[in-house]
Image 1 (cartoon, one colour):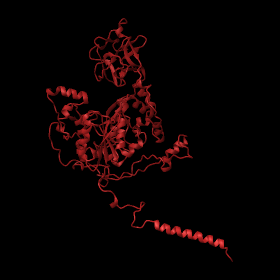
Image 2 (spheres, rainbow, N blue to C red; image 1 turned 45 degrees about the vertical axis):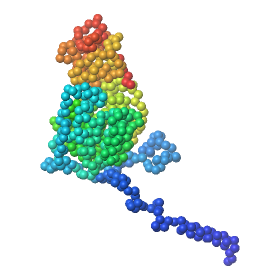
Image 3 (tube, rainbow, N blue to C red; image 1 turned 135 degrees about the vertical axis):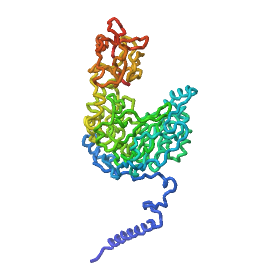
Image 4 (tube, one colour; image 1 turned 45 degrees about the horizontal axis):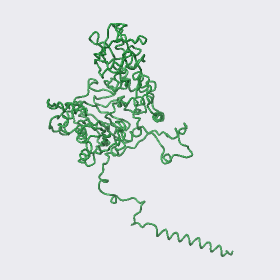
Length: 603
């Protein structure tokens, strides 16, 4: 068979081109001794210094295992997601999943050995030094009176006394004796301690920092993150920046460019805290006590979905004494709670919770927390974002409701997202918030839906079952608003007095607060959880705490502009000149016995 010459030539050209490419590739390929940008680098090639010596966790970041829920599929199914034909770039890289089961890191539960000192207890007592040691009262003489009053007005504390007390002072150990004999697995997670401050006094702020460094095992303290929420005090500028340099980067300072407020500033702190595995939030004027770290972090080291709250004892802001927190059961233990106006409360530890524990000092569940001091696993914090309130409802074992904000909008957002039909009880206690604009809550509602959260009815029956025993569900309101003298500019004002204090008459300011009252179907004349009632004097009236069946003694006759005290048959009266409120024999001719209740809209 004869081949055509053209075909042979074309074949030779193709083979020659292929061999040329092979030779060229061999010259361009890196030799074994050359640097390969894709090869694994040896440790010797890594830069030396801080990067090598940087803080390392005691245990690895936990691997999370749980039931996976494809959030994108849910959104697409309900018509809320992106176009499935043009997937979002983030979706193409990694699907969004929710995982809420405990991490797989094994951690041994703490054990109590009553005859052996706990393994995290200090081996030696702290040395005593200058005044204020061990929480003993530090009393200044009369020569300091004016300076003390000025400092209290400026900072809220007696800074004159504080500045004379050591930043490293000892504290008196207020713990139950049993606390000293708990033994903890030393594979605790590391922590970033976050402290938010605004125009804080120097010594109270730095004593907080000093106490954390002094009483926290160094292997677990990853960093202290200080968030300056737009302070303008001179001592919080260059002086602070220079002072924290002594800790060689352990204490980090970040400044907000505008006033953010406590809640937002704490969220910023979480973003800045990148080293620790747990976020611990502390107030800017507190002192941690002996062996504070292990009991707070151990539950989280075992189960990442737990949030822990410490027992918060009391430091007197004038003499700087230390006292155990008040209230609670016979051991001083209490659960966080709220009344139906969402004011922070504490209720004694119930028999139901005690039955779950073997020892007095074991951790226990709490349906609420004040929100000032707490610990939570860092990644878990960001999984929940701003919806920390949802923890119990969304299959999480410890944590209830934040009640830390004085802004009514935050309260309304909580009840609108989570409280279901129970929100009516909040509005019964805080009627002025009914028309309050609280912003967009669609993301929070979607969060609740996608995480298959339980109802608030479940929460009240299973977790917060004891709150109605102490703070019964409020009756519906008949009237609410300011109680204004008829056709005058004077209103009844509690002046912030509670538990036996005396209301007064003051100029109406239309801002609610101490001038906001309500009268309900149970005939209680109330302000928050306080009732107006007759005092020891036959004519005086006082404001005091009341339960649902207490002080049911008032009728408001709107057409007559009259409040009648039913047990005595007398009428509510006033003296605008003396700023007094009292009850007196009813007299239709007295204008001082005429009143009107005007609704107030919260702003």
